[in-house]
Image 1 (cartoon, rainbow, N blue to C red):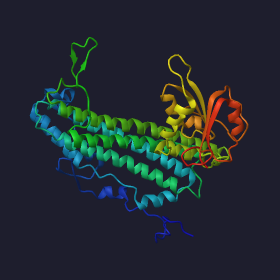
Image 2: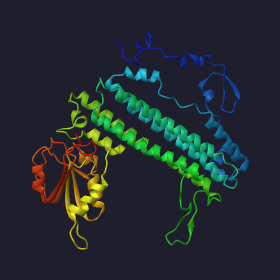
Image 3: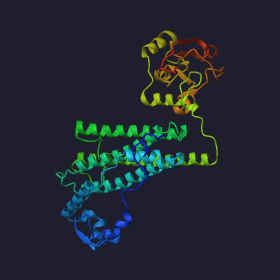
Length: 438
């Protein structure tokens, strides 16, 4: 049977053939057209090399600010037109998906790692080019009517977004297509999930820049371009001196800062994905068994699975009943004021720990959150402690109160609660999808 996306399922027969064969065609080239549109005869690959720079060019490369202003404008025009002529960004087409589905498990992992490295390098080089072009506007700061920087910001951000989105699409497609192959272990998937989370934040930053541009006419908000020194009396000029038109300089700064943050993240992502892929390959070559996905995908004794817990942490899956908490604080906990010691609370089946967080924010309560989800302490950075509530437990201390809300009946926590409380317990036996869950 043929898989969806395979060559046979798409009606393609015979071996794969590349639609182009570049090397035999080189000998047929009779001439080339350079970037300036000039025709030059000859088909040697060396003809594509740029001309040797003149002495004037070498001097200009040292300090552009000393060049005539008309040359700077010509250079800017050349860079902008070169940006316009860049090839469009490729998208993750059906042909790419078809080729990816025919890869083995090992090849898929390597493919993702190589693709991440490719995107990282492309964005790195592209950021350097855009930054160099942006620097020309500092030399032209006495000509505020030159506002082509608006177009440069728009197209450069769009191009970077497309590069990353193409990689994310490829990554997601291979992860979705892994159901039958089981190539990706939970550890490897965690690396992919981390990438999605960081890109969500960066894409949100980009949307915020767009909103600022629509609302205020500037991409960001800074107090001043020039920073006060330690005495607060003198100022330190930025690159090219203090610009007379601060708005355009702020826009360029914030635009380049966003691309720079994407570039740095991509470098980290490519390195992390490469290490994860090589670790998986090394484990497979050594004949070691793969990681059990059940620990991450299936909860134990009614607890949420680690991945489901993480999903709720990242996408706002927890709810908070503030009315209940106000009543609990006023009528049950009844904390003292002044020099009174805060009331101690243990929250069993705490879910995301949002109830303990609310109580701690009052300054009147010291609450500690516990949940049975595997690796919950690592997921929450230590704000929720891992505790198997299905077994008898003995903590290092007792608490004035224990709260146990929306915990399913399969959790035998009452004996544990009585053992660790000194004043009382607040519990709710109705299972809910907002807490430790059923």
